[in-house]
Amino acid sequence: MAAAAPPVVPSSPTPSRWATSAADEALRRCDELAECSETPQGLLRRALTPAMREAHVKTRAWAEAAGLDVRIDALGNLRARREGPAGSRTLLIGSHLDTVRDAGRYDGPLGVVIGLAVAEALRHESLPFGLEIAGISDEEGVRFGRPFLGSRALAGTIDADDLALRDADGVTLAEAIARFEGGGSVEACAITPAELLAYLEVHIEQGPVLESLDQPIGVVSGIAGHVWRSYVLEGRAGHAGTTPMGLRRDALAAAAELALFVERLATETPELVATVGQLVASPGGNNVIAGLAEVQVDVRSVDASVLAKALATLDAEAKALASRRGVRMSASDRFASPPVVCAPALRNTLEACVRRVGLDAHTLASGAGHDGRILATLGPVGMLFVRSPEGLSHHPDERVHATDVALALDVTLDFVRALGARIASEGRLS
Ligand SMILES: [Zn+2]
Image (cartoon, rainbow, N blue to C red; front, side, top):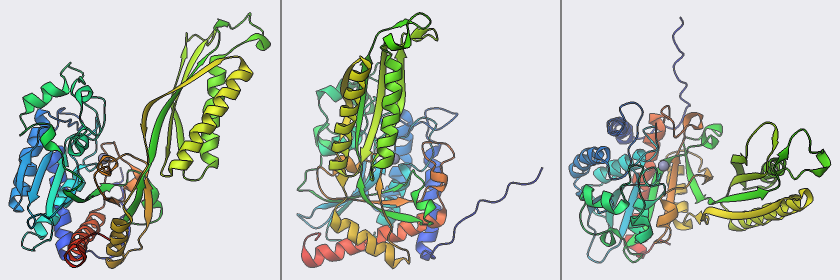
């Protein structure tokens, strides 16, 4: 059998020597973190679990070696910090340490280890702000079925309803917090808007755009707003042989028509993606006309007006086709989050840093949700994407190119220094 061809690594500018060796170390650390798993086969690391504690032990050691003071907060966020001058704000750099089931090793951890490498490089340089590297405990929402619990603790919005969430074993979030024994109260996790200078996250793209453009890294313009809307269509079940076609109220046929409309609308609308990922029909039999169908639509756009208009168009179409087909229609949202625009001052600085390493500053929107969506409620957010080979993520074969990681390290280090120079001279971001 012929040996597999080595993977093709695209050409890019040469990163600094520091970044090349720091990238190798960062990737080794991602490998080490991937060992911290709840399941022996396939990576799974959820919030407030023994596997997360193991990841904290390793991450703490790296952070302390970089001269940072480490604490684990009540929600299980790892917070590695160096203080700034008295009264200064904090630049937060981070990403999440939790994973999906059967995960890859870079979605989340890469942003944490890049933050640590940059903090280490800056160890003996003074900065006019505090620097905190955050390993956020829960972004994916796998354990409690609700995402962003870690960053929501940082934003101070964890409430009684969250604390009563239960995992698959019946353990509530409140009980998991008590068992994990992070420090302090849930309230003490919070960062105030007055304390936060900015939040920066480096993350794999999780899509094919940068690869298709032959770009190692990209500056994120914003995080798409995102709505899960469920349309329930209620017709009348009946005999598939005896009911004439003209006398049917077929809920599944109505649902299918709606699903195709969703695809057409998104295809024809710039800045919009929409998906019907699930369609449930009942009673469910090949000789029974479906009396009830539910169409679950995922609609996303970085432009709030595009998103709102698309949802209104979908509602109107669902209503029209339901009335034409004699079925009843109702709609409800299971999840809704508005778009977040990355702060122009941070975006411009990131773009300048990307150009300084010899790349075009390509900007792109994030279709996936990120902790920045939550932290944007506290202050300006910037994001840098690293190319995902084959656009692959949430998959054990998820990869990154070492050179891309090195370029992201050069950009991130330059970004922190540029921000430092600006705060030192102007006292503010823009
Ligand atoms: Zn992620």
